[in-house]
Length: 457
Image (cartoon, rainbow, N blue to C red; front, side, top):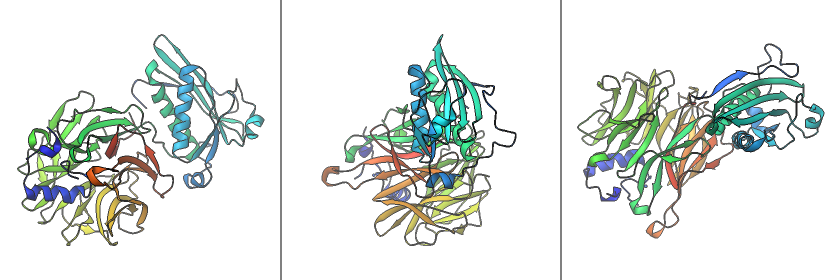
């Protein structure tokens, strides 16, 4: 059954969902990783002295002047793949400038790499055998001639990309002083078919777009996947059995369970930081309220009862507060309340209406979508509503989600559709929290509703 054929909800409920999902298509209407062993390698040259692990280059400096780093091929097909993925991760974040260069044997001749303008250098080997893969990796400071990092990674032969993402994270952290985010994934909605009758499937990919595959078959309209911060679970909304409700999918087992059998429609789920609770919206008459559901006991708790449309709840990183969207003041705006409910305070005061709030894992920013003068904007503000900044704009830019270190946002960008849906596109992009370095991520066909995972455990 196609999503547009579903005769399943009332006009009031459809209006409530439309208020939550905005312009995006609804009902098809015209909208260290497991298995990797890491061992230290002894230094080939003078190692960085104690306390020298603090980065000399800040992220802000690297935005202005990306760090030149030589990443040679580490030998063989596996080494070529590892080097390619490392170069892609570092180059795509906009903070590094990968340079091709010869692979050094032993202690590098740093003068050669200085002449290339390099600030850092990667060396090592990648060897396969007996169904396994071993990657020896060293990171060098070209200016001082010091080995900054030396690690050997051992895993299955099919884990070359995973090891490469881990190495890229190590380079990011050692040179910039912050954890990287490359060994992570993005869940999303893959869309196919004509604009008026789109099939939606739950899908997942690596953060660079590789290894993209479906998690659901497309029988039912599926929207808004959200990762658990502590386990291999996704919460999402599905129209399964002709009734839109929130489900939880265990990625390890493939088991899917209904979360909270409410009288109304449940939608817009988010996990609490400890992964034990999911907060969501539930329709009620002509509005919607915010509830939590305990994953272990299935106990429900109502947090709002304003008589308005309260939706899109998201916890602060410490779990003490929730930001959400509500039209209780007349138009959709952003509010913050205690995680236990009550005492909601409005924080958005710019022109237009606000939605899709999500709290940064760093705790310093809330990302949002703003609609004004017929156009969407994607922006960030401080949790008290100050310092609002618009990062990008478009016909539709929506559903922001932060990467694990809070430095980059993924989001959905859609274009206007002409007659018969001509010209419509829906894709996932990323942008730095300063509005720097926007780029598209390849996914399966058209895509929307991105949700960034925590770092892979």
